[in-house]
Amino acid sequence: MRKMAIGLGFVALCMAPSLAMAGYADDRAEIENLSNRYMVAVDAGDLETVMATWADDGVLSWVGGVEHGKEAIRKAMSGFTKGLKGRAPIPENATSRPRTHHQIINHVIDVDPGGTTAHSTAYWFAMTNQTPQHDVQLVYFGHYEDTLVKKDGHWLFKTRTVYNESASNRKLFYPGLGETDPRAKH
Image 1 (cartoon, helix red, strand yellow):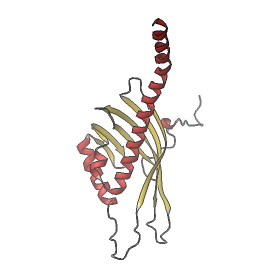
Image 2: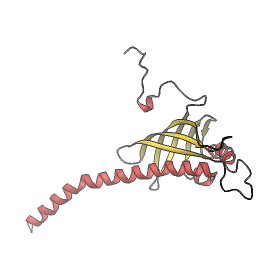
Image 3: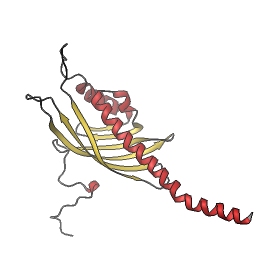
Image 4: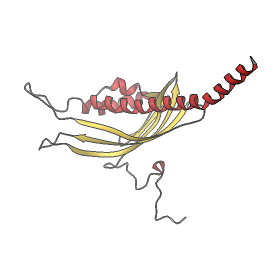
């Protein structure tokens, strides 16, 4: 009986790191999915899904300014998503339509010890076929710097800073991406 208890203890000890990694993998997958769901909802003009990704006291910092709290974010995003939804009338005989799609890639996600807060950076870009020649073109690109919180077992954006390389909120160097100014004397 003692050998069996020792054996089971050894198995449990060996499995503990696997369980911890599974928890991290689950958190990472949910955070990445949250970012993807946000992007798809923005392009669809689905404001309710966009808002479901935010903590009540969230802060959005973007080219439109800084929005404090879910209601301020809703107001700002309602104008943005409305502008994306149905930009041009669709003719009755249409087989395609002009649209813009945002993509999000290269997620770097760090879940803090305790698993209730996380930090994420990711690149984003947008492509459109809304061009005179009806081809696909890159419209703009940038990156996100996010802080997330886990509420009731689900991840939400606490802060989201959106940098857009074709807008006024771009910077020369991004410490959040690990960049430093090579001209600076160390």
